[in-house]
Image (cartoon, rainbow, N blue to C red):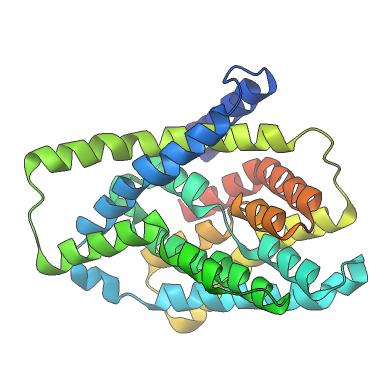
Length: 304
């Protein structure tokens, strides 16, 4: 109960304010787009850069929790791939996007703010590494695979993945950590100010996005199955994989809690770009985010 009051509710309250702002048209036309652009291109890169730059480079040798996260994610993907025909989802592209929804966590817009609230800013380094890996493997990989499967060229998808500002920010932070480069007080203060804006604005922007997706969305049986897979099966399999590979406790906790996050909004972005399961992916994001208020509270109580 303490986790619900002190951690989960404040985070979801900010998301709720964003949802209300969108439903009442407080931001006007294009407000949500501008907020997401601010987070993605201006505020989030400094947050990711500082998380990497302030971490001693030897800490990055902890690879076991990343391997465990991949193993657990692959397990969920495999089970959902086999189950989808039974739920009426057929076709390579539809099944791929459905599996993406069951495995891609909202690590950037929700896990980072939640971890900062629960454990402090210095706790975010394993979350950042998982977010980077999953964005490259799942989002970037999905764009490439789906374009290749449809007979389209893959160069644009590869370029889009490599030009992601998160990739550059994390890479630059790793170099600073590796060579132990000083940032300078002025530069560090500027980056810190921008980074402090990332979490609250990201949560508010997530609420705006959910507000846009809300009208007309209906929750079918497949969304409930996928929500259960994302919020319960995914963290349980990741926890089992962390135990199997011997991941250290702190990083294992981070991996399990990231896996317990609801489906990320990029699932809907990829679905919209492919013109497949747009409404269904929006429904999954809405439903899994709402249900995660309860499931995340339980996981936080267990971890804390």
